[in-house]
Image 1 (tube, rainbow, N blue to C red):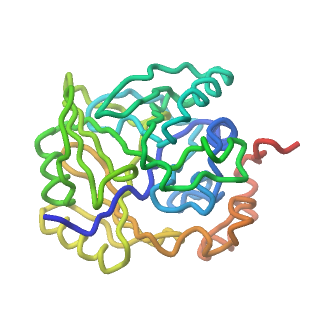
Image 2: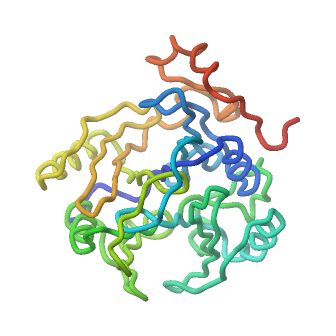
Length: 316
């Protein structure tokens, strides 16, 4: 059934050292740190949000830096690579930039008539850059360290390996309303809403059923986007009707969220587009200082003592 989900809202992964994470995503990849805050559920650790100039839904990658967490093991029951979109003519620039920063790249390779460059972040999280015509529908950040004409334009899509492939396929198609677009080399591509960059989930047929181990360098969850609270209530009802345990609505300050884990092991979040990242600081100041939700503001001094100081790339 077609549903209210229009695409990907954000991806959240587990990182190690927060400074190393900031240096890579804001410095090497040139994304904007649009929000410096804490994990609302475990507030003595950061929650770092990166995106385009204003953190539009679909451009956002976020991280929980837990330096003392165990290392991960890739396997079934996990989201795998996060693909970021770049303009078609930007691939050579990015290969040279990544290699100049000591990042090894694989490819370019062809997949679903797209050109893909694969690499890993400093924690071993799989990433891809996908040259795609529709990338240019989203603007590059003009004030970033990467020229706007070749800058990353947001999330292209994500891939996943399920512990229960057929059941996850039914969740994507029947519950979440994504439609199957194509199959190629053991991958089935599903798209949400109008499709295109920012609306893609590739479900990969597992070579073996060894479960992955969550840890540093793995995706924690994938957030899909809905336009408003009413659409979120609709999805909440459908998820519950299908027998999944789904959380109540949680206030994440910049969006409202519900979460559920499907039988293949994948953790999904359904996040509203509003209110956005300018709700507590103007566009020109996004990510410039630690922001806390009202219920954590009384603990500001305590939390600052527990959080390591961060230096933004390009500052002394």
